[in-house]
Image (cartoon, rainbow, N blue to C red; front, top):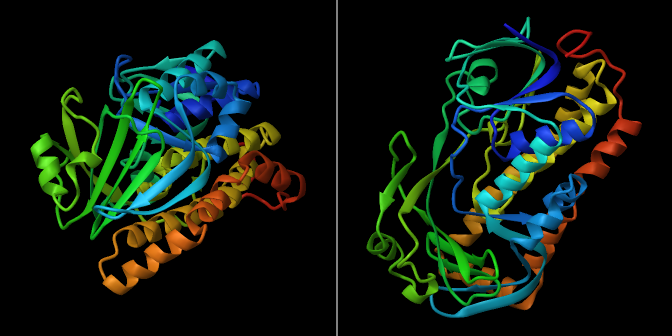
Length: 396
């Protein structure tokens, strides 16, 4: 058995896991990442990040390089299936290939001295001894386990919410990248559907996410391969020119969007949940990756303050992050209902609010102005952390 009893072990080398690894190592806290996939794995299509996440990536010395390989937005437009409803200014939003962010996080983590053990698929975890075992029969003793293993987290299933499988949300989404001259974020709203498109670099690459509300149960993979004609059939109410040129876009996939109910707590003895493992988001506010980055940065701050007693670090994290993430989960679901209205009177009221007020921009600004660093710093300075941990006193 390998001894990493001074390390925080991170299950999952995605956005939350790599961000947590970078944040911990920058604070001088030993960390190790266990990832079940091989090194050469590719990572999805595109991603959007708002200022609440970007300012944290800047603190981790990643933002400048990311900005140079991405597209920065300050404007957006909204239309119905065929005509424009509104244009408005947005807070800073960065869009890029998901692989670009992953590569920069990985490089930063390695440069900070981090290690990633690939081909490590979790088999079991002994929360009392803080010992983790993988299907390749490797075993490790850790100081603490951070579960960043996504919506299908086996740690969550075992220790937090047994018999609560992810549920299909009622929404499916097509995702792809094509060529277009689009220079801003563009929303198209229709009955039970919407399409959002945005450039992701200066080379004319434009990503789109086309969401449809439908009663459909996806297979175990949660996605199915499709064609351009399948996509256009699903969104026949829209002008086909709304999509970027897809001739060279490669394989298109239709994904089921799954959800899990909020947890009462994101912590247990020697275990902390982060990102989608704790609170998967529907994508209607573009905050899934942002919440994962906020979680990871916040937990690292709490660990730095309470490294000798991680129970206190956990409680600080749980208190600060539970309020924030539950609110964003709720607002994201509400935004989906607003996008997909069918009642003509409600649609007219929605469109008028979007056209004659700055409600869309103001709503986004309130979300994007949040500073996870300042929030956690205030709590660590003034919060009531003197109480005995709910899992007993002593180290995490």
